[in-house]
Amino acid sequence: MDQSVLFINHSRQKMKTIFNTAILTLALALGSFAQQEYQFANTAFNPYLLNPAAGGLTDVAQFDVIARTQWLGYDGAPRTFLVSGSSQLNFSPTGGLSEFNVRDESLFKSPKVTIGKSKHVVGGKMWSDAIGPFSKTSVQLSYAYHIPLSRTLNVGAGLGMGYSHFRLDPSKVVLYQENDPTFNQFLGGTSQQSIFDAQAGLVVYGKNVFLGLSTTQAFKNQVRLNNVALESNFNRHYFIVAKYRIDFNDVLAFEPMMVFKFAQHSPMSVDFGGRFTMNQNLWFGLQYRTNNALVFQFGGNIIKNLYLNYSYEQSVGRIATAGNGSHEIGIGYYIGKNRNVDKELRQNKKEGEIEIKESEKTQLQ
Image: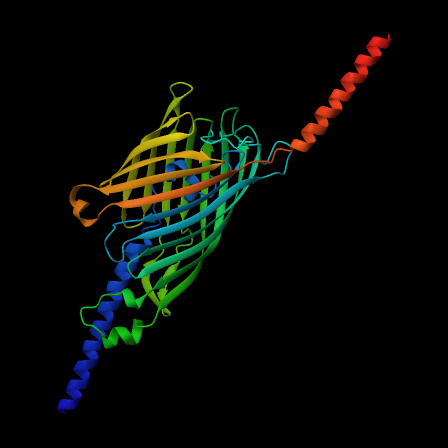
């Protein structure tokens, strides 16, 4: 056989092998990434981050901005940024928002969980999650409905639906052979995919207790890169969040918590620990994650409905040398019903005039 023909056939076979290997490697990496939904240290105390049914537990609107950076000092380390908000709607005389911190106090007390009434709750989230060459940007809206289950418990169900954009940046892919022609031909350009997805959840809660069940990436969309379908999916994730508040006195309380995380082809992860709260406006806590991480956090309601939470996560055990720790900072804001001072003054003036008239009548008699 002609040597040139042998060379061409050998080259084609080599290119095919390299391409298949590249696709397989990316598929495995993508599958691993797809099984890692965004992770925050404060999810037990802000369960709406994982559960669309968990908004509206109190009678105030709540808005959060959270940023998280893992494994400082490493290129391509995980980074997450999220903005969220949820609020009750006023569809009934007993529903909607209540007055909150009307005196604009610093170190104000956190809003209390309310039960014994129906609630219509709307919310939304926007987030960006990135690790290495992979990134995912999502927008989601949610609706939930809560009803009394008993005199001490409410139950609710919620659904979140939205859009996600997944992207592979080839400039961040490290190749054994630079300017690999096979990689450049098939995956050299930016690979991206847009999907429609959903979250769903259930909650049961009282003034001191909370239990939530939820799932994310419910549609289990198939991963496609440059219109090439891979044997990977955006797998469903399942979460269980449980916590309980123990009041020692009017000043000090303790909230033990557990967060269970499940995903297909991944081991179960459990966060457990708790936090102490003082005067319902300052807190500090400690958590342990079963994949070898300790989490320290503290925060407080600092000024005029604004609160701040900081968490530091340190890897321990075998993976302690793989990361320099993770930092997470969250800033939130509560909004309650505005106090109508003018209406109160008019009402007080009217009541005072009535009292004067009644007093004058009594004197004339």
